Image 1 (tube, rainbow, N blue to C red):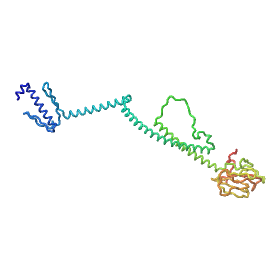
Image 2 (image 1 turned 60 degrees about the vertical axis):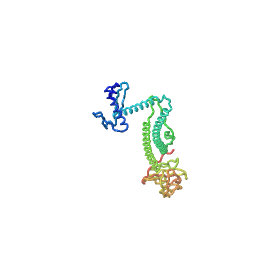
Image 3 (image 1 turned 30 degrees about the vertical axis):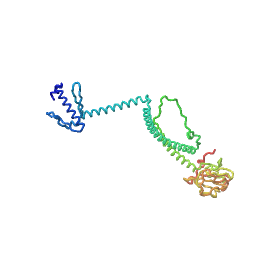
Image 4 (image 1 turned 90 degrees about the vertical axis):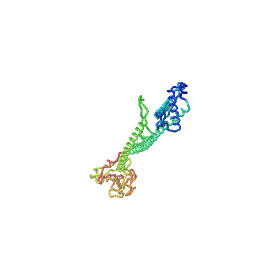
Length: 362
């Protein structure tokens, strides 16, 4: 049989290659069926090797030269191929995304437009949530400032009244009024950022709190001062009255001697109203041998006022009276030469000049 093969033109080298191809094909078939391949011994018999079990042999046969070539693929080839495929996939993905984002605006494809709109909606929603959070925080700050401004307006009105001013006389205290401002248009301008606006709002809030505290302290001082003044005998007991006899040394109208007058006299017709010079408590309301019908009002801190020669007493001992309240009427009771009001101011029992306390009328 070998002679017949040699007569057909096969050389020993070609015959050897055909045998090799046969063995390779046999190994390939055994690998496909899960059997263990063999390796060839010196006698031409292949022995099985576990390492070759995972290899893939590809045989290329040329009909022109009757020459076979074998390509063996092991795990290194598989790893390199997998890496190449992965790299190719990533490159294609990146190129596709770049082209999509680069030319998506100019490509009027419905699918691309839908993707772009979805991304824009998501981004707009996130931005809106952030802006809404800032707006909520600023709205709370604004509400606090509005409450503080209402408090400041109320404090301003009260202070104006305590100071004897009308709210309309102070334009800054009128609700809703704003001071005039102006100037040339600036060439350097830009919009505020959210952080800058928040910082300005926080600074303004702190300033409003400080001003509110300062006005509160000022109100307390003014109220205290006003309360003290209400307990000082500063109001004239006779409206539009005048003095007929001052405080100090004078000639006694009964005996012509030099005597000390401990008060001032207001001449008036009988029945003329006598008002309390200050708020206080009535400590005496009765007839006195020298003063006639007399009224004493304690204003606290050792200060009291005395109203003598009255015709009628309108309050009684223990009553609380307020500044300007009608307490008696002018008369000529006691040691008197005619209808008038004898008015005294005493501090810890010592007579004081009432003219130093009384505010000028008119």
